[in-house]
Length: 96
Image 1: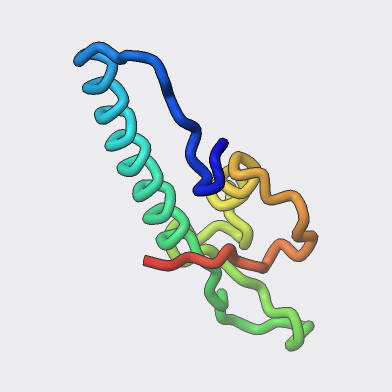
Image 2: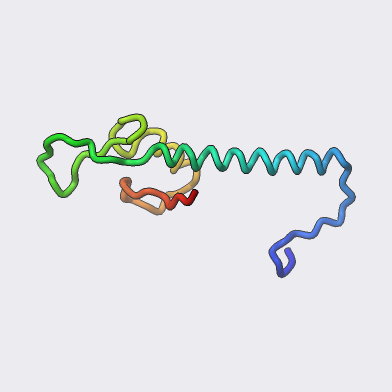
């Protein structure tokens, strides 16, 4: 890796290889956007109703209405490798 953070490639690539790499880059960008949209949809909200613990009200996912954290959010957090947070009500920083 050079000082600019790039790995220089000294191999001649065929046109098909370059087209594949360009397509893979586009696919990865679209997949990343999908993940961000899913995280944006699955966020906690107050479930409403009466609770015995006003400091920690019951929260539900605003999209699927499961108890927070919903299975979709948990699966995404596990797949992204975010193991450091023990507070399950925390959300990852999402920027559009």
